[in-house]
Length: 187
Image (cartoon, rainbow, N blue to C red):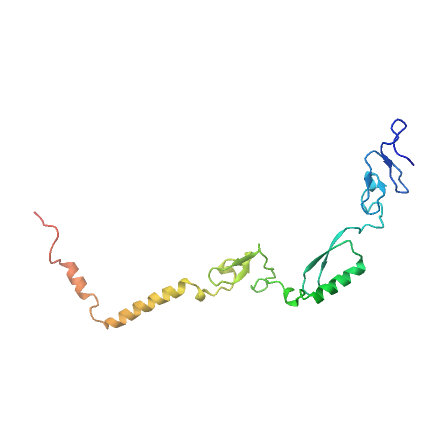
């Protein structure tokens, strides 16, 4: 069957699907089987192409380490060989499979790049839902500002004990009530 019309015999092509044979002026050539199809049958699925996996990209996921491996244009039998080769390569580590989760009780949130927050008080990585200290069991004693307060309190108590009750401010109160040298003279 030739394409085109009587006036333009080279214009367009007929669809090569056995049930269609529609004349299409902008035909599509299948990248896998190299046959010509109309717009309705251009996809591999619509014309049931036997070579639909030709140059297709697939991603295999290793069950041991959850690593993704990209494959191009290989048969299903080759997938097992690719996974076996990956296991023997040394890149396959079962420790990599477990993804970090939020440490808050009953939270199953996986800590990803965009879903992780580090608490400024206790330095624990939690999901965004539990980023505030009130939302997770936060150890406030490990805070960086608290040791400074405790240290200042200790210095104060040490100075207070060194006085031994002497000069507890009796002189300063007496001198403040009657100044020895007034700074302003009355007329």
